[in-house]
Length: 305
Image (cartoon, rainbow, N blue to C red):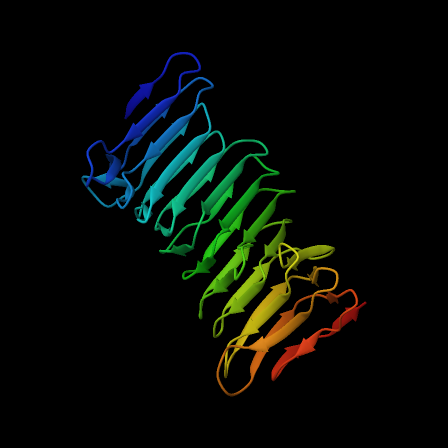
């Protein structure tokens, strides 16, 4: 086990140095390494176009990278950030992972032990989440997990699980003009515990057999809105079905005042099924009526004006 500790509230900043180099932080397999400050910040960045990698050497077991004592920020631009298999990336403060016009390839574990802590995965452009991840979690409780492709599209191309701790919340957002939160076919996004999921985007797209699942058994569970003054569209997979479900909690789908709410199939000819399962569904428009293209909605839906 190795440790690099800054004295006092010192800020720690690491980069790859020369252009063309990726940045890799590695620890021995079966062990751990720690970089810490006492109230400062920790910043890890790659040169634009190069990757940030958290990995292990000397085996394929489990290893832990501790980045403690202050808020952690990692940055890659036009290149992915990767957490390798068997790696636990851990902080006792907030974690912000910036991947502008790129993605997160998560094959390990990302966790914060901060009480009321926040884990943010964000891009000012498009953001894609892929890999074979373990749950992303805030173990201190009452945390927040934010996944934001604010400038363009947020795509979940793999199944992820989010656990912000009891009383926490999860946000998926892509609120720019033309924004889209896209759940790729065959994937399942799971929110664990008594935590509300909010999806904010003008368009929410479900791929074939995609599922979004919140385990809340009663009360508000999943809230869907456009994230701004634009219309709200829920798109189902052509010739197939996609599912948004709870364990009994309420699904609320709300368009802004004066803007339409529509349920429609993906482009092409045919129908799509959008399943709204597990608990009551409430759709809300103001001075508008929800519209249905050739789309099937399962379960009961209450439309209010």
